[in-house]
Length: 272
Image (cartoon, rainbow, N blue to C red; front, side):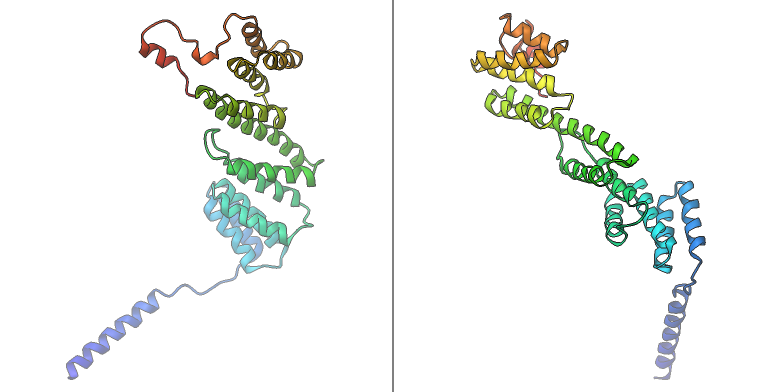
C-alpha cells in the first residue's frame, strides 16, 4: 500500500512540474511606440503576419491611444498584403464604425475596396467579389470624390465595368454557338445598355447584327449596324458588319469553316 502511495505521489509531482513548465510567460506591457515600431520593421522585411500581430498588440495593450488607431489601420494593410482579405475587411469595417471622422478614413474605405478588387477572378468564374468590389469602389467615389483615392477608385470602376461586360460577352457568345439567339441578344444588349463605357460595346453591336441576321431580322440588323458605324466608324467590328450586310456571307462567324476533314472543321469551332 505504501509503495502505491509513493508511486501516486511521484506521478502527481511530475504533473505539477509539467504544468509549471508549460505555463506561459508572464504578461509584460510594452510602450505603444515600441510595439508599433516592431510592426513597421516586420512590414519592411515583408513579414506581414508578424507585422499584423504587432499592430494588433498596440490596440490590445493601448486601446485608447492614437497609436492604437494607427495600429488598427496598419493591421488591415498588412493583412491585405498577406492575402488575408477577409480578416482585413473585418478590421476595416470595425475601424470605419469606430473612427468615422478619422483624418485618413478615406484610405480605410479605399483599402476595403482593394481587398475585393484584388480578388476579381476571370470572366468565366463567379462574379460575387466583382460586384462587392464595385460597391466598395463606388462608396469611395461617392464619399471622397476629390481625393486621390476617389480618383483612383473611379479608374478601377471603369475596369470593373469592363470586366463585367466581358462576362456578359462570354455568355452571349456561348448562347450564339448553341443557336439560342434570343438569349444571346439579351446578353449583348445588356453590355450596350449597362456598360456603355466598356471596350466590349463595338463587338456587342456586331454580335447583335449577327444574331438578327441569323434570325432573319434584316432591318433590325441594319439599324444596329448604323449605330455601330456612327459611333465607331473606323472600328474593325464595323468593317465586319459592312461585309455581312453587303451580302457576302450572312452566316454567323463560327459557322464559317474552311474546307477540310470533319476533324479540321471541328477544331475551328471556338467554344468561347
